[in-house]
Image (cartoon, rainbow, N blue to C red):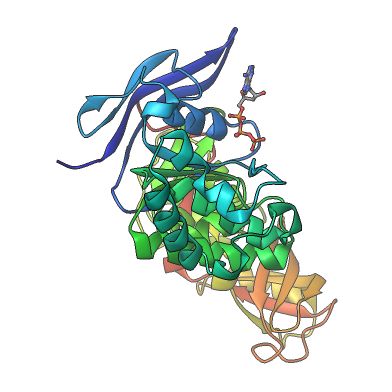
Length: 371
Ligand code: ATP
């Protein structure tokens, strides 16, 4: 029978405050699912309810059809890695990994065999006897994961496991954990507030906002097709521009520019919308027109989805650059490179093309997945 974890209409209240609201979710087997959202949106509380460290105020959790809601944490067969790692500092690497097996009274020989396997898996076989206090941050991280995997859990739960590491090591560990998870095929849920981390590691991202699930999708889906402004803004850099519908597939931007969009979207009367375009989708070129004023008038009449503007800031990160373009009524962020737009500098007059297929209409109000 499938070991799918199903969360049904789960709510959690602390006193008068409801911090998890009507969560419905199925965790696909063998996949890595990230709970992603800003601080305080309820992702850790949801993970702790899955772990059995908190009890839902209402709703239920099942696995393989069995009700887990009131099953104590120690009987759930889940492995967990906390932000703090919670390793025993003076115990050896092997001692830490064996700890859950000792608790379960696994015989000594089986313990030693399993610890050896796990030390190979995390590539630290030569460090079995070293106290964990003498390990680097990344090595400690691997030991914590090995300990969580020791009793072959059905589910691996990771609560911001990389947040204490510096940026470079963190990125290396993201890849390492992802490869390990795929190799073992272990269903994993990870909490993070870092969208890049979620995009790098997850099969499925669950975006949370104030206790609600705002969107569930693959990294590409949530990036390319966010359901609302909150998700669009949280997942990566985006230009989110106030827009007014003007006909079936056309909107008017704040400076009066008319922009065609290719996808149709039903908009109700009075609904506030935004136009989303990602910085890498904007095509930039330096304008050859003489004066800014002339440009403005020529562009307003242009049907090629072009807007004119002036570069007000450039963030140069070597291989690529990010330019801020002040247009009439709004600013645009554009990702480009010196090779694509040679000579681009602060003060350059530019034309920015917003290709219709890359222009998405999104809801300005928060959207919630229905209970
Ligand atoms: P972070 O990324 O900062 O850890 P989070 O999204 O994981 O945030 P939670 O830790 O789940 O958020 O907390 C959600 C809300 O519930 C917060 O407002 C928090 O203060 C509150 N909260 C969490 N645990 C408790 C508790 N035991 N008692 C009272 N309030 C709590």
